[in-house]
Image 1 (cartoon, rainbow, N blue to C red):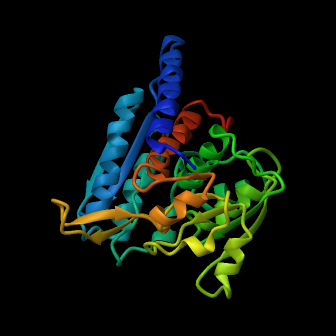
Image 2: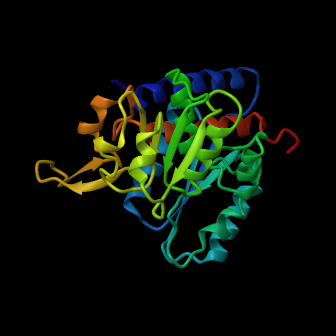
Length: 295
């Protein structure tokens, strides 16, 4: 069994991005600029945005964080988005999810210019990805694809089971793995809450990607020997032995599943670090106009 070390891989990719930024600056280009809008005071969102700001500093990006109050209206948020859309110095930006309940997330995300949508959530980027056209790919799926590539995990002709069908992870992951290329060319099955016999589907899989947000859902009897397991889930569970009173766990029962696997991601330290790094990769592409060259 080999661990897919997200922290190590993230550092490697960040070092490459930093070199590319230094090259751009030497050639007279402006410094890449990633911005974020944070509405309210969600603890997990605060931590995630904090990681993004720190990562920008590490690779030499300019970063901007706009904080808005919990009671911010949809109109006020849209005005802030339009301001970022029209700011030529900002290459890409995100609106941190989840948003307060009184704000329609889909409506908000549709107001972000596709060429600045480095989260890859806009329908135009999603559609371009489906058509195998240049697009910003949402950060978690892009991070997983990078992991598979860098660890030389063969996907061609393999049977992959994706557990979860969200537009952020499950659906794009299934499309990316089935597209021509490497990683890709896999036969993909999507499982979800209405799927019958999930255990039987998983046991047949060469690769399992668990992205449903249920701690310990994937157990040892669902995994065949030699499978690759990518654990996207991250949940807090009570743990009195920890100073914080909780510990972080994934969707996979790691201790019992890991011995069966050829490769597996840990939680924490697996997919998570690569999600932030993938956002930086998309922002670098935005700064270089790689996806939308005529904008």
